[in-house]
Amino acid sequence: MTAEHPAQQATGQCLDEVCVTCSDTAVAVTIVRLLASDLAIVDTPAGEEEVSVALVAAGVGDTILVHAGEAIAVVAT
Image 1 (cartoon, rainbow, N blue to C red):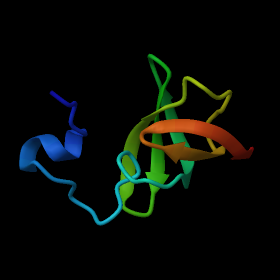
Image 2: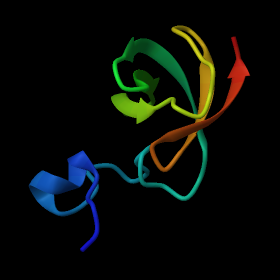
Image 3: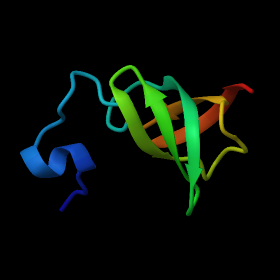
């Protein structure tokens, strides 16, 4: 059994052509706010999404690279 992205749960498929949390590429996004449990809300071209920032030291306003729902690098502070 595989875990589904929240956008897939209701429809069984991604709602966008390239979803920041399930695409094969890293996407540069800006952190809008930090949440508990090493999560953050980020601004993407498709709107706001929740991602993990557990692997990086990032704050609100930072631009991060996200791959598969996980921030993998801070590219601008």
